[in-house]
Image 1 (cartoon, rainbow over the protein chains, first blue to last red):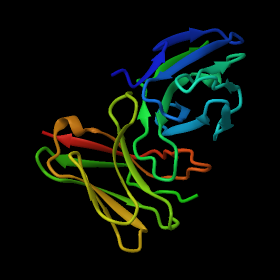
Image 2: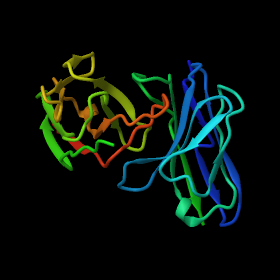
Image 3: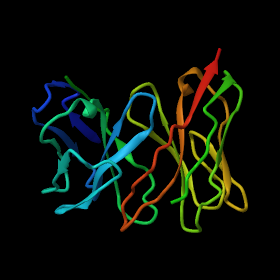
Length: 114
Length: 112
């Protein structure tokens, strides 16, 4: 019973490098999303998806790309990392609809950009 | 989108009930109230949600006022493991998306 799995858990990048944060869920959820959390702040929505082939921007999408080729996976790509992207990233999933109930979160990926 | 207002921090004695208030005066009729908590730097954990009726589960109770402008999360017997940041969220979902807006929440400290 894996739930939402994020990899890697920790990553250090240099400015300008690219990388992909992986997120996978095994609950057949249509909805998946990425949040970032900076110190002392709440989570902010980056991108989300309501199903395979469908993605949309959240509150802070600049500097990030996503795709949703399968129901299970929702990778987050940083094309050219910047120090401002140093943060903890959380992936989440749930059913979609008006009353979707619980949003399941992964354990987080801690990214440092030097 | 409805926003929420929560106290920055609260303390509660171990074994006592923790009552966490939340104001959401601009909530619309079809928006749900959700509560999540975040322990240390872990991913947020769902606690409970409701529309207009009071709700109870194994973790907590949610009391929503009749006018829906405020709510209270009740942890009936707080333990040290309940020390966390608690987020009150009004769901803003569009096109079936479960998008949640997280504010800064209430930091609850359970004191031995």
